[in-house]
Image (tube, rainbow over all chains, first blue to last red; front, side, top):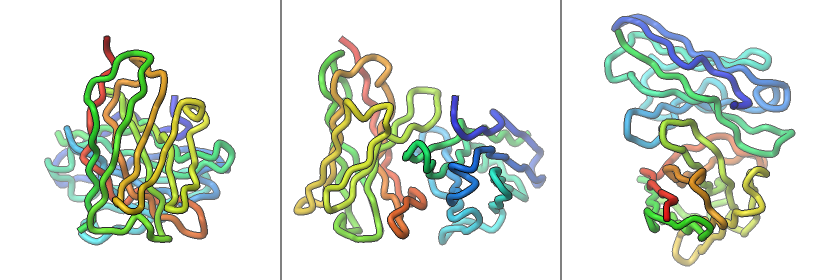
Length: 110
Length: 123
């Protein structure tokens, strides 16, 4: 069981919006930056969001990140079939002294 | 363009040592801005951080694997390596190497990943 809790799956129709939550504690999300990763089927994870809400160059603004207290959220607007993937949140845990990841959320475009 | 490439055996026998290398191109492994790390993903499961290394040789390991893990760096070859000893079937996974951006000594995000290599532990 992961230290960071994500819903196993979310789904929506093309063009709609989905949000993915990532719940942690004061030793991780509450006091450290959160990043988000997209893993398309059969490929390596790719950085989507860093420092809670910043997008690397080349990541469309349809992807957004936010954080409040010990929870973080990834939002995807204008959902496309190419967004079908697993999404992971990650952060540093100051108590465990490890990088930790959520269990992953599978996004399905209906 | 930053690229990382894992290499090593795809099949390891139980109780043996798993050894992988990661070759970095397009970036210097001696940069003060990054750690270099290993992450694994068992088939159908989530991501697990194994550990990371700084170019100075300072290492940081997942406590759950610490007794079996060694990560080393070769700055002359722009490579870093993973050794995982006494493997069992539970160590079967896709192993990724990654660049970890650091700030004030803390890991911020994994900004570049290798394509991953499947390592199967089987007799």
